[in-house]
Length: 414
Image 1 (cartoon, rainbow, N blue to C red):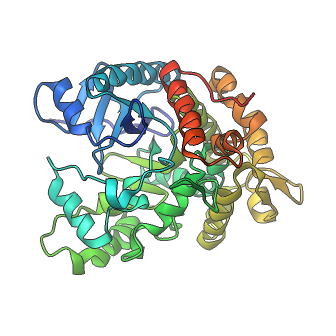
Image 2: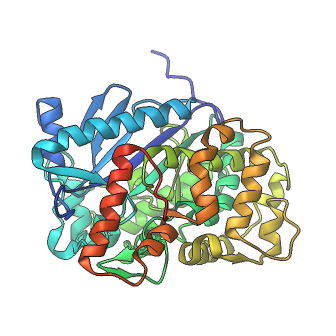
Image 3: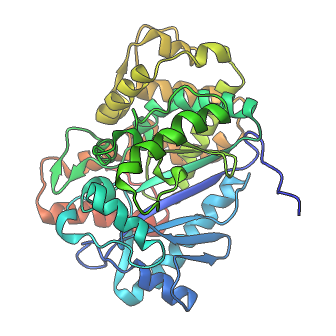
């Protein structure tokens, strides 16, 4: 049997959304993901195909993943399908008196006391992670993200895509952050999910590296330097041999040569799927411009250092759209000659330019406007909460977010 044809650059995309399962009344986390999947499928399972979308388990029992069942080029239709998938999931959760709640982190969950790991298929892997890293922490049990999968069909395509992705990663939190509150307190970063992910593999730091992937541009070198490095780093803790290098890689973007894709993982989940789709479309438009060498040749893109990009990712994760970017070498990669601009201004530039080559920008403009006008969802959540971190106020704000998810509308502050 012939192997399936590899998708080429920008031919189709895979998008995965992670949501918290919470109590309908209190919004406390509810560890019922396995019950929901079993009820839907009629048997114990870790995933369930519901029309054009698939529901899947994650490490913790209070998290469910919703994704398109197949890669697609029609992201607008995918957004509609994902919103319908949300509705189906909400219906299934009703029997457990639970609902889905968006945003990158639950604002008052205590993972040390409330985490329950998935106990079924692949439980031995989750147990092994827990024995090494302690998964009863925010970085493992309270980090809900969006994964954008971008295809490549050859080493040449991988080289161009990986170079572009490395450049784009540091500024994605400026439009995608949604996690400003941890255990009823504002964190030092607006994107606290990114801070917690930074910390979650400290015992074996090679798993995350500098979050920005290393400047590697062919499969053989990636396997030799990254996959072999991952196996070597985990070996002292993996006497049973349960870990796969593909799943150990916890960088902000990972190469999956087994399926010919690069997966971007630095985006928090938003208030409803159309906004996640809009952010992904904006990211794809920027990547297309970079891959086409609109502003700088590939050789110049490949020379930007990992430490510089990693430091910028931290700054943008902290200050999101308000981050002042003064690194001339970085700005030049996007055709910006100003001495400094904010990350929000840089995104407005990229979206304006992207509209010339990516027609879907016009289709998602209404879902990008709340971000461009009023800031990231993290900024809007912080503005809505203000200085009132009482349980009652946090519940009001996050109930409104949950209502936005159900209704498919943006979170806008009056």
